[in-house]
Amino acid sequence: MSITIRPAGTVPGTGAGTDERTGERTASFRWALAALSLSMLLSSLGTSIANVGLPALAEAFDASFQEVQWIVLAYLLAITALIVSVGRLGDMVGRRRLLLSGIALFTAASALCGIAPTLSMLIAARAAQGLGAAVMMALAMALVGETVPKARTGSAMGLLGTTSAIGTALGPSLGGLLISGLGWRAIFLAGVPLGILTIVIAFRALPVDHKRRKGTRPGFDTLGTLLLALTLAAYALAMTIGRGSFGPLNMSFLLVAIVAGAHFVFVEARTASPLLQLTMFRDPVLSAGLAMSALVSTVMMATLVVGPFYLSHGLRLDPARVGLVMSAGPLVAALAGVPAGRLVDRLGAQPMTVAGLAAIATGAFLLSLIPAEFGPAGFGIAGYIVPIVTVTAGYALFQAANNTAVMKDVGSAERGVVSGMLNLSRNLGLVTGASFMGAVFALASGASEIAAAAPEAVAAGMRITFAVAAVLIVAALVVAVTSRAFASRTAVPGDVT
Image (cartoon, rainbow, N blue to C red; front, side, top):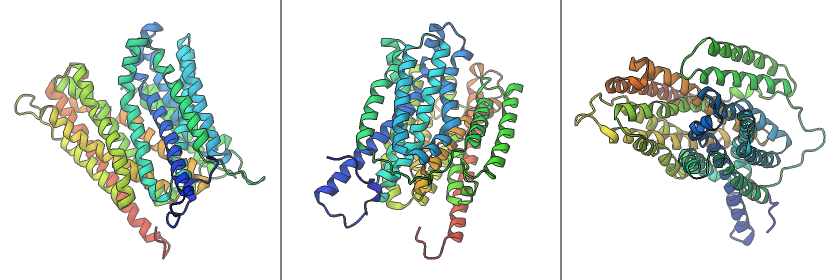
C-alpha cells in the first residue's frame, strides 16, 4: 500500500463510499495518528522520567541539588523558549520533514544522555532533547489537521491528551523501576527504542509535505525568534530558580523578560515576515483559548505542588501511599481523554469547554472545603481523591475542547505556529503555577518551613490555595463566555461556524 497519500483531513466526510480506497484512507490516518500520539508520549515521558532520578544523579556526579536540577530545567527551558519558533519553522519548511528531524534529534539526544560522562554534557544533551521535544509537541497537534478528518478532530485531540497524560503518569514509576534495576543511565536510554519506533511509523504513515512554488516561501524572522526565546527563557528562570523564594536574581530575570518581550512586540510590528502575526490575537477564539489554557495550567500545577504536602504532612501518609494517591489524577486524565474527544465531536467544542471548566471549578471548590480535622471528622483520602478526579476529568474535557476550538479552522500556513502557541500557553501556566500557587500555599499555611508545619496549617494552606484556584477558573469561565459572545457578534452573516 502506498503511504504517500493525500492527507486524510482533505477527504470529504460524506459520499466517500465503502470501497477499498476508503479503507486505505482510514487505516492510513489511524497509523498517522499513532505516530503523532507516540510523539506526544515521548515528549511528556522526557519531562517526567528524569525527576525521579535526581537523587541518584546527584550521587553519581557528586553534585548538589542546585546543580542536578538543571537536568530538568534545561529540558523545560528548551521547550518553553523554542516551541513557537519550531512551529513557525514547520509551517515554512514542511511539518513532516521537521517532525521526523525532531524525533531523530530526541532519540539521538536520549542516547547521548545515557552515555554522558559528565554532568555538563548530560545537561547539554538534555537541552538538545528538549529541542526535539519542542518540535514534537508543536507539530503533533498541527499535523492533526492534515491527517484526520475534520469531524474527528476532537477525538484526535483527546487521544493526544491521553498519551501525554500517560507519559506524565508513567515517567516516575518507570524511572524508579529502571534506576533500581539498571541504574540512572537506563532512564534516558529507554527513549531510544521508542524513538526509533516512532520514526519508522511517522516516516511510513504521515502524508508528504506539499511543495511550495519557488518564491512563495516567507523569510524566517531570526531577530524575533531570538527575542522571543530570550523573553521566555528569562521568564521561566525567574519563576523556577531559587526553590520557592523570589529574590534579586529572580527579579533580574523577570526584568529581562519584560524588556525583551517589549522589544519583541516592537520588532514583530515592523518586520516583513514576523514570527507571530500580532493581528492573530484579534481572533477572539485564539486569544481566549490561549488565556484559558494558561489559567487552567496554573491551577493544575497546584495539584502537583500542594497535593504531596497535604497528603504527607496533612493526612500523614507514607511515601508509597502518597505516590499511589497522586497517580489517581493522571490515571483519570488518561482514561478520560478519548471519551472527552468524542463528546467534543458530538456536542461541539464551545459547550464542552465550558463544561470542562465548570468541572475544574467544582473540584477546586471542593478542595477549598477540606477540614482541618484528621480523625473521624475529617474527609480523609476519599475527601482528596473525589475532588481531584473531578478536576482532572474536567481538565481532559477542557483540553480536548479548547485545542479543537483553536486548531479546527486554522489555515494550513499557520497551524504550526498556533499549535506552538497553545503548547506555550500551557507551559507558561505550569511554570507560573509552580511559583505562584506554591507561594500562596506557603503564605496561607503561615509556616516558614512547610516540612515542619502542623497538619492544621497544611490544611489551611490547602483550602486557601484552592480557593484562589477556583477564582482563577471562574475567570477562565468568564473569558469563555465573553469570547463566545464576542465571536458571535463579529461573525460574518451566514457563516455557520
